[in-house]
Amino acid sequence: SPHWNDRARACIVGMTAGHHRGHICRAALEAACYQTREIFDAISMDSGVELRALNVDGGGTVNRFMMQFQADMLGVEVVRPVVME
Figure 1 (tube, rainbow, N blue to C red):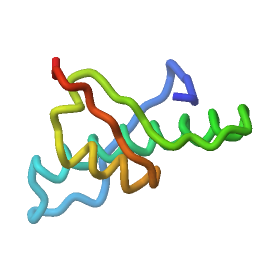
Figure 2: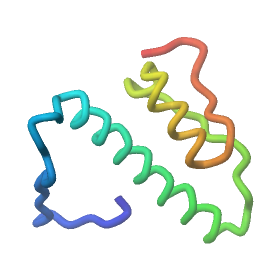
Figure 3: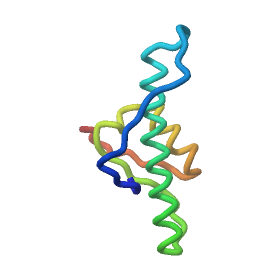
C-alpha cells in the first residue's frame, strides 16, 4: 500500500554468498517501515496536520529493531501498547 496491484511481482537481486536469511528478514522489516512511512506522509499531506506520534499494535510491535527503525524514519515517537499481542 498505497499502491495496490494484484499483478505485482518481486524478486531479490544482488545476493552473494555473503548474504544470509538475516539480510532478507531485515529487508522485509525495512520494507514494511517504508510502506508505513509512505502512508504516514500521505495522511500528513492530505490532512495538513503534522503527526507527532505513531501508535502501533500487532505482532510487529514486539520487534525492537523494527520499531526503532520506524521511529527513526518518521522522526516521531512510536508508541507501543502496554499489553503486547
